[in-house]
Length: 264
Image (cartoon, rainbow, N blue to C red; front, side, top):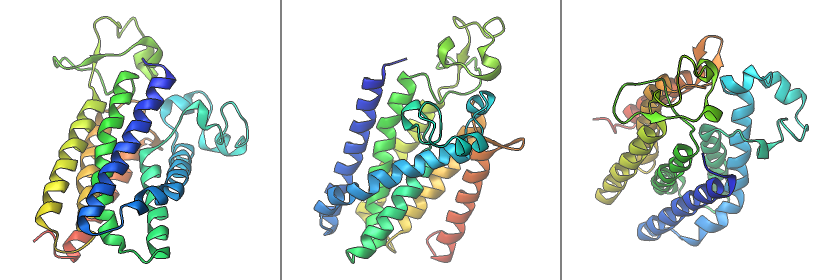
């Protein structure tokens, strides 16, 4: 596991890289690239708030096991150690960040009379690039791993990062038990997605906004399977909440693309 300064530095670098890619693509598209940096004054806090709210509404199993359910996090919202407002205690959700940032982008584009679809198309490429780098921090920190595996590329997970039944070191010895590196699978997914979207963007899209829908379709479809492997996921009843969300997003994106004629 790595220290918070290095973890934070990688995340900041990932955000900067995503913004830089978006700004460069915007310039090539004929959009004002300076708006990327100005918009971040709104997008960053909205994405952060969205990410935290997602965690509050769908806390992972390890957090629920400690008694910090959604009801507790809301009831103790201003508790500074572990409450809902305690961002510094850890707990953010990428889907909440995407929703929060997307809402802010919609508002900003409307306010400045910018073409939302064109901005979404370049933004999702930058987002996928940033996600690819950001998952490196998760891997170095022993996060986002899956169930045990015998595959040669499985990773060892330190005792401090173990959750649930995998904290039982007698049954899952730390020296020999290897786990699926879900963070690596997702890094490969978003890296390939960024490259594919960039190639499609260079060739030209039929309608503005299509690439954003393709991002949702492919990313959420991939996450559906990855979250089936992952440990420490949020649940709704006995169901994997992330698979429910990803399944709905994948279906919604596919239907929307079909209506726009982008699947033909």
